[in-house]
Image 1 (cartoon, rainbow, N blue to C red):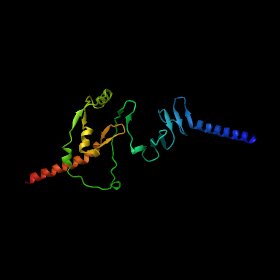
Image 2 (image 1 turned 90 degrees about the vertical axis):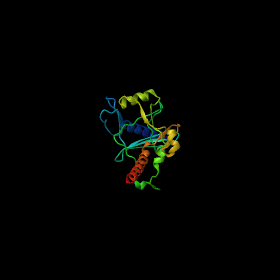
Image 3 (image 1 turned 90 degrees about the horizontal axis):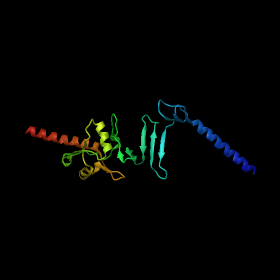
Length: 204
């Protein structure tokens, strides 16, 4: 009986100390700002969290989202090595506004490097369009961003997939997306081909 009583006292004390530790780490001030960790509120932000990052894991699976602030530049990571800017509630993709976008292109990370050739014959098979997205809210957002012109310019993924399947992916929901960035080296190759043909004609 004494052993059981001692065990209960030990467990109660442990839980009490744990509670004190948690209370010391989670604070909510009079300005309705929440802090987690040994830190103080930063600026006007409602929450300030001290640590090297945050890790969100979906219960019962391997899906996750990770924010790592310990490196020189903050890193975002997710399962499948991709982060999708998509509003699940509305079923719409989000727009991204940034100053610059840099694609990873280090030669040391690549293999089977081959020069592009004959891109012109493939590119001339692609059709280009102007269009509007069906969702009215999405159109309204683009009208605001694009200064009153709600038209988009591009191609249809299903058509591109027939000519350049490597430029099109289908997400888990069945939506098709085009990698427009990979068209740039193909366009450059096509321009170089046309330039050579023009130079040949001029030389005659």
